[in-house]
Length: 394
Image (cartoon, rainbow, N blue to C red; front, side, top):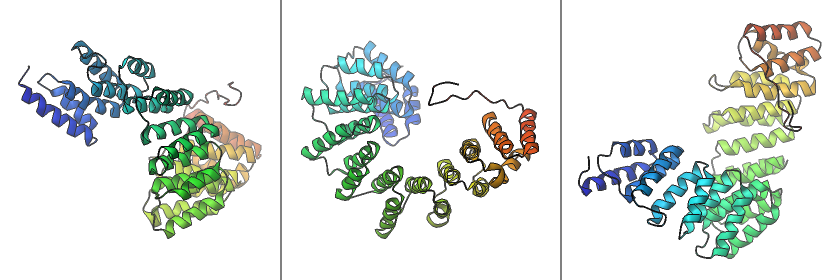
């Protein structure tokens, strides 16, 4: 039922307020309850909620409604940009590119949306090409969001040359001091293989935030610079910055690569006890990885006991068992592992059961190996064919 335009205004204000406050599902529900014909502003208000929810179907439906009502491309740049944002965030790159090419005028939001969408959806080279096209077009100047999106693409591609060029461009445009750009540069340099330049960007930032500390600590960790990562953590504490889960994951990664199991266990324990941060699955898995790399598989039992029941232990067990086989010590040091399976304390996939059985057999514990296989048969668990990521074969 079509009511007065005043009703449309009220509906639009409500939808817009809900979408801006992050209550995307409520915004979409309000749009569905509308008893007035939506106008362009209404559609532009609900489309960001569709993007947030990843609701491509509703985004397409709203786009179709807009076109049927005579809102061709260029009729309202705000609606066009909102539709473009939905397509990009939902991974519909072909639809996004088609709409982008048909737009008579493209502002910085449209260009940035395309660079971001391509970068985030597995097309980093196309994202960099889009950024270059924006510079060649000259109608819209890149802002900090555009540069950050391009840096994400460069980080994914691993091109150090492109990273340096983007860095130079950002400095020339006065964007080098922007915190969000600086954080993206740290991440990009680290992923392009230059930890020193990542650190140089970090120390030259006029201000830092938790993202800065977490990113540079992770950069040191993945490049095997455990000592530097620990020094950064110490410096962060001295400056009164309280670490978060991402910083601890970076520290655990550094300890893992350096084989510092004791240090990793100390950090894992300090997360909840000292800083009130509940370790997540990735933290536990990283410490298990550290135990495996160091051949200290007997330490894994205490980690299993610490893991909350709601965490799926299968992935963690897979990390543990892979090192058990490669190190050949599961039967010697990993006394706790077979009991987890035989006593029914842990459920896992067929692949994990098979690895446990093999590790026990390799250690000469034939009875235990057979018992694990029997347990696997009792539960009707089958081992799926593994896919070799290196050779591409099963």
